[in-house]
Every structure is written in C-alpha cells, then in structure tokens.
Length: 102
Image (cartoon, rainbow, N blue to C red; front, side, top):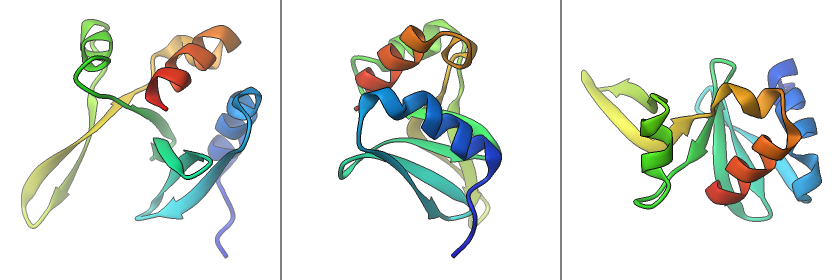
C-alpha cells in the first residue's frame, strides 16, 4: 500500500474536526472522504473541494481554478475547485469550505 504524502496527512489533520475523514489513493492523487462521501481531492500537493451550481460562484469569484487533467488528448474539467489559501491558515475557513463541499 502506497504511503500518503506529507501534504495529504497535513490536510487530514486540518479536516479532523469534521470527524470521520480519510484519504484514499486514486489515479495518482487522493480522494478525501467524510464517511462514504468524497468531498475533496488532492493532486500534485494541491487541495480541491467539490463544487456544485450553488458553491461554484464562491470559487470563481476568488479566481480559484477547477481541477483539470488531460485524457486522450482532451482537457477534462471536474467539479472540484482549488481550495482558497486561507484554509491552511484559519481553522474556521477550512471548516466552512469543507462543510460546503460535503
């Protein structure tokens, strides 16, 4: 079993107050789950939160980019957006953004 990166472990520590948070390796990155719900992903030591039609505006308003990857020569965009920098500095910001993603 592959060892989690230090960044993934750091993210899990920050998310621990949400309860029942874990990471699962997938496609070169990690899915972040609360229970059975994947609400975030880590790729290339970057955290992305799941967005929907309601929360997407909050991400784009701050200029945060969606997660993209290239498959078969085409760029694919997922509904996960880069976490704002303040989530790594302020516990309340992490809780707020993570709960919206869940």
